[in-house]
Length: 457
Ligand SMILES: [Zn+2]
Image (tube, rainbow, N blue to C red):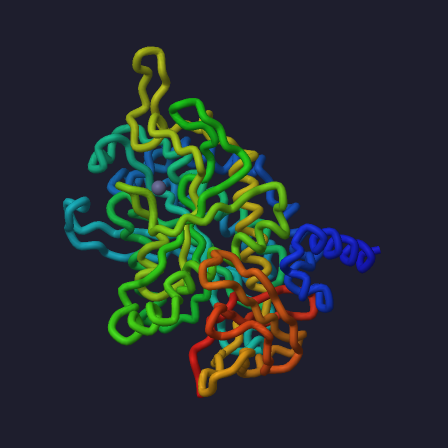
């Protein structure tokens, strides 16, 4: 039955996506992989609810709060997160390793005395790590620390159900589901500390990954993914925002000049990842919209994707559409008959579950896909009516071929695709008028991230 259903599904999708007609011969970009669909179906909003309730039960998870108590404060919270990760690891056949990643942070604006910051990290390795070629990493995370109105108050209740119990729970639920499956890339699930004190935990981990030269393909930050009703009573249950910044501090000098002159300001790593997420989301969670916002984050707010982006990694942030200021960074209280505070009762678990499903589809499919193709070039040595691209052959044995994507320079999404099993292709679209990208695809239809070509002779 399965092959027939695939054909039907891709035909149905093609009917609605006329612009992607070129895929008809290959099925690759739009084809649904039944294994990924199964993984997405295993994500449970009931589990997310249980995890958020437990996280909120620690009273506060402020970075400077009690580390000794077994029931209250950040120490108890991180030991519990670690013990949950270890439960999932036990079912992974030794592939998932769990550890605290610690960093001693010197005194700073929001750290009154040197403080040991502790990220909780679960690393899911491929079954045949050695056989899969160079190691590739994917990161999904949320921050487990919380705060109330005063960012320095470590004693007051700060349940942090949505900020960021929701993102931490999504990360944990993904670790539970994905640990029971096998992938080609290493997936790292991180509960970050010190976000509210200045993105400290994420900065320490991202800096460690950079210093080690890790091949980190994508970082998905989930920070506040459970509110569906804002303070005006407006509701949105069918979409999530995805913040993606353009340039990084590394895009200076000749790199910046080249990006500007070629019109590649929207084709940096983070925006390319964001575009990929919308495509995969549409494929596996079709009743839910991922709305890209071409910005770092909201005004007056920041998130743990930024230290990754700034180190040259592709990194984006999921955040609800209708955030509610009565339930974030507030002291828990009733005022004028109104309940304030970041309490579990204001988290929409069905909604957080859908965002978790989008994350699961993206991470599982990227971790199953081949590495992105290397040395992708657009031949610019001659005037010509058509465009020629070439790239290096991928080393993986299950690579079916490559999908060349194209779009007009003002289009935010890919408009067309051509499949080839070769490592060079000439397409009808003029290099003067179009942007291009190339992605590798395996025999199950798992596509890699898109690589933007460099001009070559
Ligand atoms: Zn947050």
